[in-house]
Length: 142
Image 1 (tube, rainbow, N blue to C red):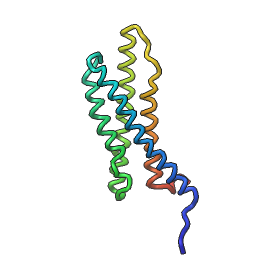
Image 2: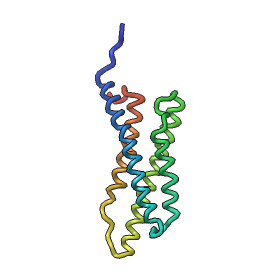
Image 3: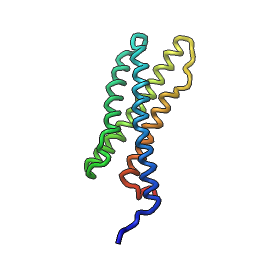
Image 4: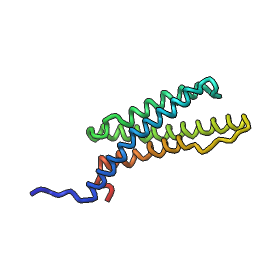
């Protein structure tokens, strides 16, 4: 007798796969954000921060799309824990960059606009957490 999966589990898998495709969009946006930072490296108030951003964002992007999601449970737990910790520090890094940009704009007598690129990157990166979780455990969506 074939056991049928509940419809909600299939919906959870479909939704999580769609969210996981957002990881590639996030990596593209991270690349564009880093490219913009590198273009204005000479004018940046703290050039070392751009290099920290570059190194951390590359590491974070690789970790995000590395195929640890479909591995054995211990590997998945290690990967998920690492992703959660790295996400926390990545959001902290993005917010720190926004603060540095705002202080530089304030010193120049200007006002920083809405940080839309950083906000989109944060949203897409943090959306990967439930995507990864429900891809691995679709029954948890019930």
